[in-house]
Image 1 (cartoon, one colour):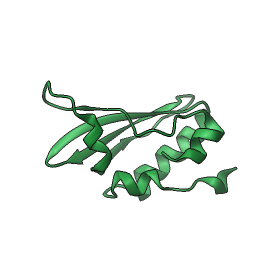
Image 2 (cartoon, one colour):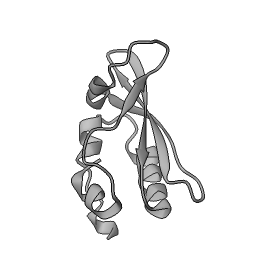
Image 3 (cartoon, helix red, strand yellow):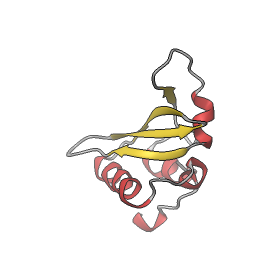
Length: 100
C-alpha cells in the first residue's frame, strides 16, 4: 500500500510480498503489476489480510500486515467490496488519509 499507511501504521512502503500459486517458481515481484482477484479479509483482532493477484494468467497470493486490527479490517473490507478487478498499482495509490 502507500507510504501514508506505512507512516501511520508501521507498514513498509514497498510492494506486497507474494508467492506464486501452483508451482515452484517464485517471481512475486511481477505480481505488483497484476489485478486484484480476491481478498481474504481479516476478522476480529487479526492484523493481516491476504490478497489473490492475477498476472499473465498466473495467480499469486500476498499478505498485508498491519499494527492496528481496526485499520486492517477497514482496508481489507474496502479492498474486498470496492477494488476487486483493479490493478495493484491503482490499489497501491489509494489514499486512506480520511481515516486519520
